[in-house]
Length: 205
Image 1 (cartoon, helix red, strand yellow):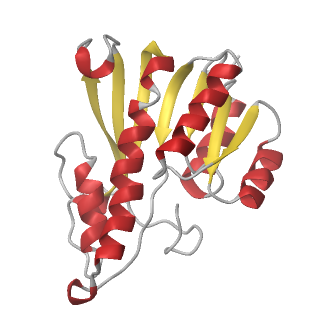
Image 2: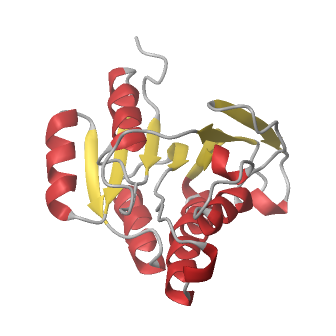
């Protein structure tokens, strides 16, 4: 029996990279997984590759109606959630003098707004003792030329302060049963990653 037997997980941008790898491992460990992706073709391919115990829901995390549809789908299947992995993100390079309002809004809408509302809208379905995982980045603490806005978005979701020298690690914080999480006792984790070889950088990943 796997470590996640009988658990239900939501993974945004589960079509490639970290999200896809996590979805495969979760299923192998016994979980049922809901993955999202903006492009239906990539989503269908990911669902096929993962095989069993997975549902793909097309959507953009920066659009609240799409997040509502995701959780409506989960609720309609009579499931509750044990793990929320807010993984969807976007990285783009832009020198400080070239940063535009469009660039700024695009990154903050996906990386910050998307992560926040992915978690918030999951709360009514989140089981007590559940887990929230956010994909962070070493860029939140380590300055990288032309990556200023991306770094700022990742700093915005960082839950605890850690040394910039950590390339891959976790930052854990147990959130008490208070009004913020509807009286739930949950564990939240930010996974801070360095550079990865996935799809083109200037895509949602």
